[in-house]
Image (cartoon, rainbow, N blue to C red):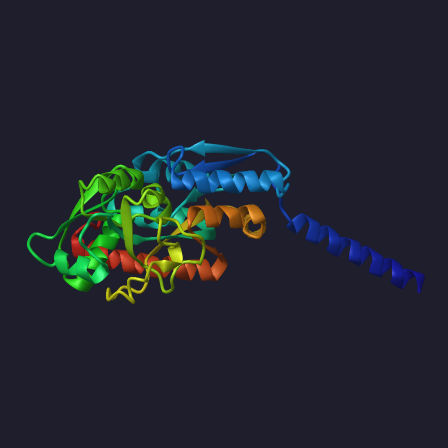
Length: 329
């Protein structure tokens, strides 16, 4: 009897030890690599997560945030993938991780990373100057079908903004002259000054001009209207903005994920650790406040669900890039 109990105790101890050794946690400071400059959307996304982790003690080591935004973010991805078995380097970005290599030769491959999670989705809207004659998205599209089209501003070229402009044009027959700027903030300033006819900025990029009644949103590229809330301009809340689909533009939705990546060579338990941390982050009140403040849509995608999202997003973008002749040769 005693011998049986002893064997059982030894086996239980061995199983416990095996379980303990299977778990993983950082043993030294973790580097958060930001694939944008300071103050950009990805930088704010990363630093918000860092502050939540520190405040709620979700990791027991320091976190060092490093900005590497050169080359439209490629500098950060090259750095993030440079040590394939480094479990102490986490890269933050968007869908540009897997879209940039489609349009230009990069110093990294999309396959050099393992996706951890997507925690937020940036919405895209059609914005016009507040004094523009367009009462709704239909009248705007009708105007863009005439003559040489309208001047549509956006952040960068062959990126998310220009991709959406191409999708709108293909779906409606409208004509646009796309004008790239260094950032969505610059595109917002140009629209407020009536130097361009429209842009497709995220809510947070145009919110200052929206509050000042200098620009007006026509529709949002989402399957449903944005969450209810207080008035942003003198007469509109985010939820008052119709979807582009209900406004007659046959585009169901268009969103940009805020994503987190690890080098592809790390062990499964490393991925499990960071996935769990990010899941805890998005359950905090601080994260909910961030989502509300930036007018993003909260989500949590990981594992197979995230990989399916990436596959579908890549396929849609690839179709646009091929049609426009943007694919890297």
